[in-house]
Amino acid sequence: MKYTQLELRLKTKDNIIGRIQNIWFIASGVLATLFNYYWHGPEVHAWDLRFLIIRNILRQYFAKSLPHTMSNDTSPTIDFEFIADYIAMNNLPNRPLQPSIGYNQEHNIEFNSKNCVEYNVPHYGLSSDKLNQMAELDKQLAQTGHPRSISCQVLVSTQSEFANCDPNCVLGMGPLDPDERIVLYFHGGAYCVGERSLTHMHVFAHISRTTGLRVFSPNYRLAPRHGFPSQLHDCFMAYKHVLSRGFKPQNIVLAGDSAGGALVVGMLLLLRDMKCTSPSAAVLVSPWVDATCSGDSWTRNQQYDYLPALPLTDPFHPTRMFYDAGRKFSPAMLKELQCPLVSPVFGTDLKGMPPMLVQMGRNELLHDDIEKFVAKVKHDNKNGCVRLETYEHMPHVFVLFDFADAAQKAFSSIGSFVREHN
Image (cartoon, rainbow, N blue to C red; front, side, top):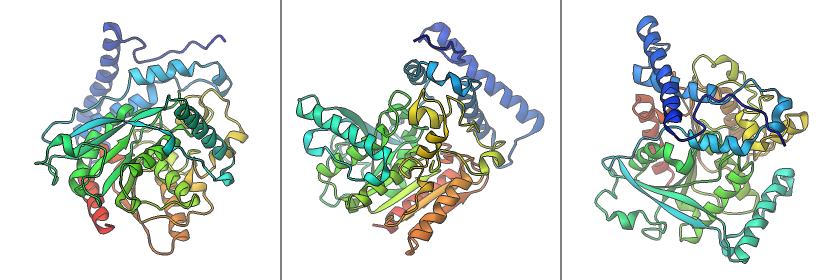
C-alpha cells in the first residue's frame, strides 16, 4: 500500500538535525509564552510562569506534533506503525528521579501459563471477544515456552518508612511482609505516550511519600501499535502477577490518571463480573471515562486546558489511535466506543465499586464527563463509596505539575484516603 505523506513537526530521525528540530519546537513555545506572560499577564492568576510554560509546551506537543488536518477518509492510508515509532522517538520529556526524592527499579513480568486468564464476560460483546483473543494468544505463547512479558516499575519515596532500608530489598516485586499494602498505578498518556512510566516517576514518588506505600506501575503496551484492549489486558495480567507474588487483593490500591483511570475502572468491572475479590480502594485522577468526549466542557474549557479538543473524524484523535488506528470513524465505531470497558461513563451497572477517590481540575476538558461518571457511581453504590474533589483553575492531570499547591494538596488527600481505607 502507498501511504499518505505526512508533514510532521518533530524529528523523524534521531540525528543532529532532528534534535535541533525538536529544540526549536519547544523553544518557540517557551518564547511565545514569555512574551504573552510579560506583555498580557497570566491567563489565570493562579498560574505562575513555570506552570504556564509547562502547560503551553504540553499544549503545543498534543496539538501540533501530529497533523490534525487529515480527513477521515485518509485513515486507512496512514502508516500507523511509523506513527508509533515517531511517538516513541518524541515522547514527552522525562524528569530524572533524584535520589533525594525516591528510587526505583524496573522488573520483568512474564505471563506464564499459571497466570493465564479467560475472560468470562460475554455481555461486553466485541470487547470481550478481543480480550479473549489476546488471552488465548498469551496462553499459546506460554505453552510453547515463549511467554510474553512486560516491564514494571517499583518505586519508593525516600521520605517514607523505607528511606533507611536496603534498596535491593524494598525494590523487589514480592511483599515485604504478609500484609504489606501497595499502590498499583496505571499511568496516563492517552494510551499512546508514557513509555516505561518514565513521565510519572515524580507522581509515584509523591504518592509513595503521602501513603507510605510502595508504588508498582506496569508498563502496558502502547497505541497505536497495540490497539484496545491490549492495555486493559496487560494491566489485568499485571494484577494477577502481583497476586501470584503473594499480595492480597484487600492490600492493593488501584490508581491511575487519565487513560490509566479508565483502565482502573475497566479492571474493577472485570474483577466484579468475574467474581474476583476487588482491591481495597481506587484513586482516579482526571480519569478519561468517555472516549467519545461528549461533555460540554470539551468546548467550554478549551481556552484553559493543554489538551486539544479534536473531532472524532480526525485520524490522529487519541481515541481513534488507541481503539482501532487506521479504521475510518463511523456510527458503528461510535457505538463500540460506548462499551463500559472503553468508556465507563456509559455503564448501565456500576455497582460493586470499592471506595473511590476521584480528583479533577475545574478547567479540564474532561470535567463534565468525570462529573457524570461520579454521579452514576454514587447512584449505583448507595454506601457513599465515591468522593469527588475538584481543584480550582487546574487542567487535566494537574498532579503532573507537582510543584503547584493544588497538586500537593491532591497528593496529601490521596495519602489520607488510602490510610482511611486500610
